Length: 111
Image 1: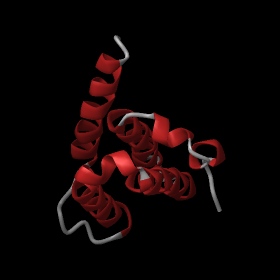
Image 2 (image 1 turned 45 degrees about the vertical axis):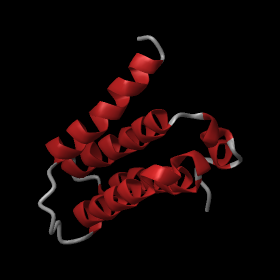
Image 3 (image 1 turned 90 degrees about the vertical axis):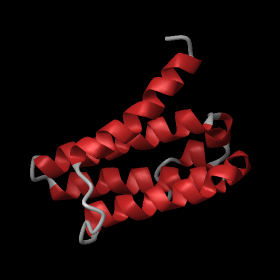
């Protein structure tokens, strides 16, 4: 099932990598907030949205040079939410990681 139909139809590829990862980070932040509130279903749905966006990001030809980093981040993200967290990730680390992309995207937009 495709969640982001408009983005999956090609609009996603118009965003810069920073904008793409900032959007992924928004859903990751939602997943963290819902998880901390004990709302497992909402948290999982936000994670599914983030994973779909990551899938679109890896399919974007302009991101080929960063593919290893993106796929590795996806692996660690999945380990954090559904695995054993063998990489010892924390909510704060994920928030900080994605904040950098939000900041870069905002700078590029002139904000």
